[in-house]
Amino acid sequence: MTSEAATSPDGGYNTISFLSDYGHDDEFVGVVHSVIAAIAPHVRVVDVTHGVAPCDVRAGGLALARAAQYLLPGVVLAVVDPGVGTSRRPVAVEVGEGASVLVGPDNGLLAPAVALVGGASRAVELTNAGFRLEAQPELGSTFDGRDVFAPAAAHLCCGVPISALGPPIDPATLMPGMLPVSSREGDDLVAEVLWIDRFGNCQLNLDPAELDELAPAGAPLQVAAGEDLRTAERVSAYADVSPGRVGLLVDSSGLVSLAVPRRSVAEDLGLHEGAEVRIGATATGGSDRAAPTATRVGLGRRPADPARQEIGGGP
Image 1: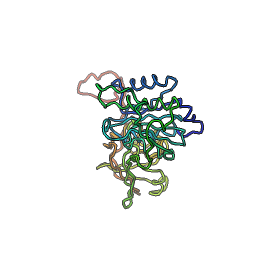
Image 2 (image 1 turned 60 degrees about the vertical axis):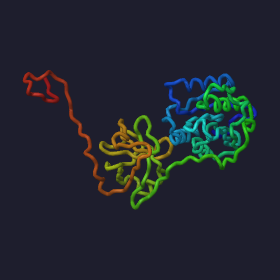
Image 3 (image 1 turned 120 degrees about the vertical axis):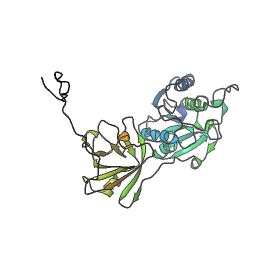
Image 4 (image 1 turned 180 degrees about the vertical axis):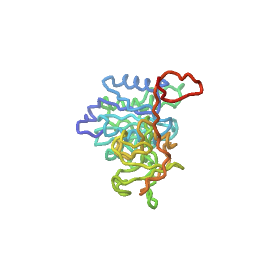
């Protein structure tokens, strides 16, 4: 988001990267797109995701942080807003001395991405009614994505300076994102599941260096999730995990993830976002559940004797 190639704030921006918890079952995403197009028809809108779980500010902030360094310079419109209509502030946060501006609610959603790209250079509260949709008293204040955030993002793309959108606020007063940190208890690393992707891989709040400190590369490890204890191995690809074991690998965000090949490790271990996972060194390989066995199944004619039901029977 902070590339040198960003356009000047005075000249506007060409891209809005849009993240929300709106989903695609309702009209919300389409309405926001249309509001932007009506104000700034030249702008390209990139949909980062609209699949954040409803009202899950932490998950939205983590998704935005994972994407941040790959987003085009410009405006980031992020809306996961369980406090819509309350006293929480609508804000625009400038980063990279104007390379990009993040627009959204001041509820911790923007904080991880702002921190990742080096912090805020300035911020404003979005109070200027001239850069909102025209007030319609008959409508409620439950759709700030349409009425407040989308218009502000679009006007920024048209060259409106961030200072015109409302009064300045001290970036230090912005709501921080609350993210867990791992800990060491005796010989164990105690981690938390930050995110489960659609394949069931579980991202942990662990840096690979923490595993290096726990045990040398190639040494067996144990993963404990609830009452389930598994032998784990460090791998570089999902397909490299041995049958019956759990893989520990560095994911595309640079954090440690749990995985099993072609299955959901979250389902295997009964994990959910926020679940505790303990990782420890072991010299024995742990007490796994039995590794799956393979049974050869052949196709042939049905046996003449109904009592003879052999798997793999030939002609």
